[in-house]
Image (tube, rainbow, N blue to C red; front, side, top):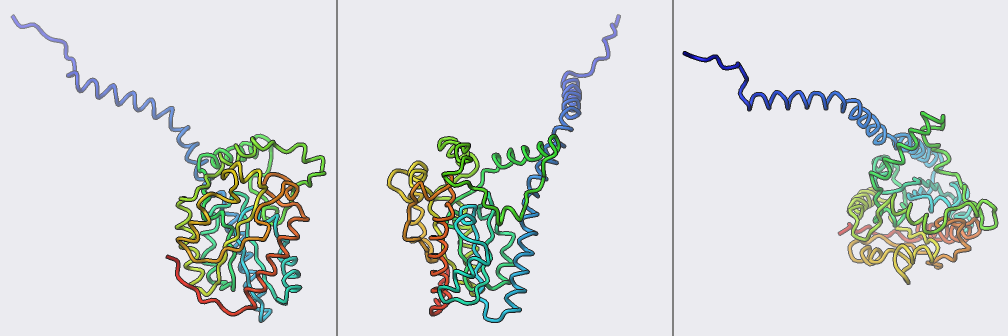
Length: 321
């Protein structure tokens, strides 16, 4: 007599079916999370687009002014907020250059508050077409990389502020190029500044600065294209307070150990270092930016170097190693 066995599916097939069901349920719950992450990540990746468009228009405006004023020497300076605080706006630099014997200077300073070379690479084609006589690069661009996770978190804070608190979503591009919100040391607002340990913690979280940075090769490539277009290129080490630099880069060092040595060994652009290589604490309104008095001294020195470079004999460009 035969017995009838229950019609059960084989164990492997049953396990596969259970796995598929579990994956479908997990996907059902994960889809909104993944969609939200994807949307915010795309927004984060596009967050610098207004910076690019704004400064492409500034480059075009400079090209138009130079064309309308024959004999204008176009100089472009790229860097971070320390460059913004250390130099006057375009008209101010032109006035300083005129005092040093350069009557027609078209000075275009482009800065980014979280400057790394990636912020400026989308502008390179326009800068090459502009054909500047001189390009000044903040030396930090060769060694600084933004930390993607930290900047993504900062973007999420901006997004939350826009959605929940009604704050502006897009950064003020005019303010990024021209604002000088840094208080003087005798300003009561100075007391509200974060202490040095907090400043360094935030700076290290936001960016990675090291002598062997991959940014070095990317800057080399940019310099090579600019020089091929006929531009002279110089690097600007912009000093910070000695106490901060010693905490960041090691006691007794005026800059990142190995950075200037690597520049000398592996590249050939000039390095324009101000006579006062290290800054007294009183020269800075916070832990990074020059007070107006110190900036006036630095800007006058820089205008003199620009005038000498533009008015002097042409320097033959040599390709980067």
